[in-house]
Length: 373
Image 1 (cartoon, rainbow, N blue to C red):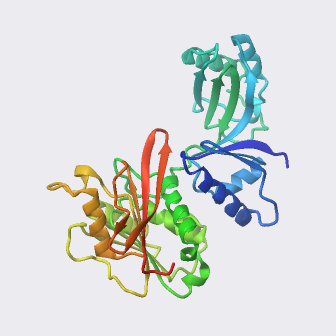
Image 2 (image 1 turned 120 degrees about the vertical axis):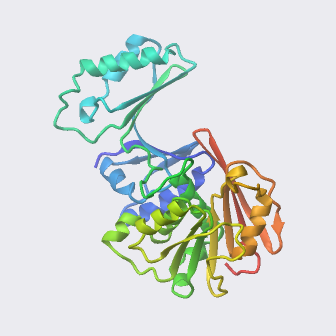
Image 3 (image 1 turned 30 degrees about the horizontal axis):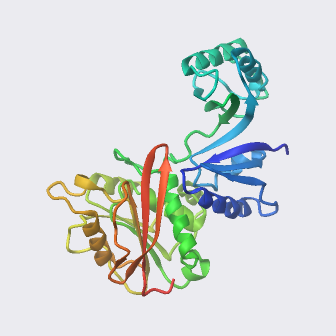
């Protein structure tokens, strides 16, 4: 099989998590083959994989936001004629280039710098090649073609898989939904800190309970399901698994979201959803000592938390720890907060910053120092 250069794009600062996922998931997807050669770069990983393998491998990967196939990399380009010649060298008839294909142009420190003119030039080249009647040897749909000029060098990449962080598993999405690949990164961080939590041996002895007290459209819960079983929700429907020792609990004050989640996950008994507010004194979840609890959430912030009064982030942290007494707590927050290093017998064991397309968030992980995991 012929291999091509692919660039797995991920949010800044989780490149090493993606490297870990690449190694682990490759062994799951292709146990008889060696992990492909790769290079760790800022914003992702460059690797050599065949198109057929990549198509299968994407069913396992959860951290990349995009997968770009490199068609040209860092070729010298000083003028329009040279640009025209380089673009025409690509075997475009192998891909479905059509009206829905997005053209993404960027130029920095180069003689050709006018993005609009570059885009018009590309459209003219594509029209001259006659993509209205594409050839029969097409590889796969071309969702987006990226042309990048930097320091008079041209790189051309093909995005065939749209936005991977939109997995489409959520029945009711709010104004600021959690990106799936950022949710998945939380579980990789937990895995680095406490790999025993995810071991099959532990699952046969104790029930693991994942609680999201601000579940919204249940992104974190669905990603946790995938992380524990290396299967998506859709794959579970076709091949049910024994999940009696995993409980995924979603809590939210929005009745519409709770009802939508209950209906959507009705066929999966390990998902349970309750309507409740964080300020309610009684928890809808029974706190049992023999269960391993992980609270993971992207809580509403500022005035979104409560319509009548504003609860400060540190107060919110204390309420959640007191109410659910988890073994691990993972908070995703849009701004950097001065959360304390220690709260009663909980210690902050990880703080990570993630940057995706200008959207920044911070992940704080607390561990119950009394637990053994």
